[in-house]
Amino acid sequence: MKRESVRKSVAIIVAAGLLVAVAGCSSSGSSAASCSPLASAGSASNLVAATGEFDKAPSVTFGTPLEAGADTQRTILIQGTGAVLQSDGVISGDYTLLNGTTGATISTTKYDGSTFSSFPIASSGLAGIQKGLACATVGSRVAITMPPADGFGAEGNAQASVGPTDSLVMVVDITNAFPGRANGAVQPAQAGFPSVALGPDGRPGITIPSGPKPTELKTAVLKKGDGPAVADGDQVIVQYTAVIWADTKSVATSTWRDGAPTAVKASATADLATTVVPSLIGQTVGSQYITLVPPSAGYGATGSTDGKIPADSTLVYVVDVLGILAVPATK
Image (tube, rainbow, N blue to C red; front, side, top):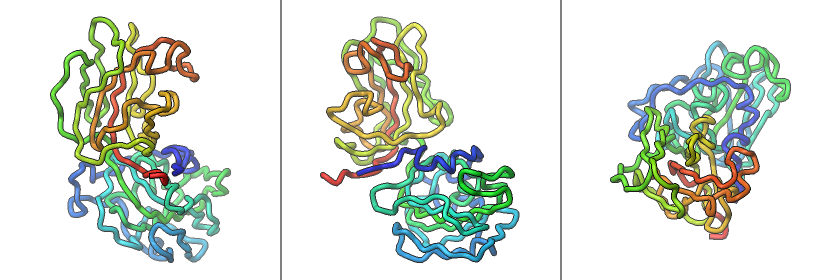
């Protein structure tokens, strides 16, 4: 099945560059009762109708020009009963984004049951999206109306044909949600592996030990999740950091540094340059693991094509398995 990347699928939204974290709902045990929404239904959002079944392309109607008022509003059109969205988590679903002033469609997913948009809530690009999704639940269809300040701002967005005074309307079907970090049970440390210390947000800090570099691919589980196991071909949302086992001990690549989890394909046969992260197959959702990757199992004598990983590099990956996005049609 096809899956859009976490960033590219919402590129037109991320282009606005307005980053506002959602307050509340930050733990995996959050409930709707303990979560504080950042937007409520109002005269603008109540004007938006979206007919059709959940996860099917809706027919969105509202009077134009829609006056969004001073604040983002949200109306729950279909109430879901699933998990509450977490502030540091990842949403997966379908959406339709429209210019509230003209009624023109700006962007939409395919609503084909296999190609969803997935993006981290806290860095989805538009403040109105984050406010509108705060404390919503999986299975919900949400209508969000955004004033320019919570949309593309005073400059508008010429590429999206949005003027500086145009409001935005977004209808989101929330099909799934994932935490932003591994939440499994901590496992005993194993000898011979680098030590890992986690920051307040779950970001791993990796300390390379003294001694010779590993010459074999080795993996140890740091946290054991109780979710389903990753199978060959699964599309998986992960957070990961890879460091080079060398004198510089430099970070080669990291979703934490880039600001967003990513979707990768688990493969038993593809090389590391294709799969992005190693040793995914068999890991359970909610787990964090560490893998030692010698050059023979990594980027070999050539290094990575982007130049971030030099030739003959030994790598250390720490990977958080956040969720399985799709099951291939061949299964």
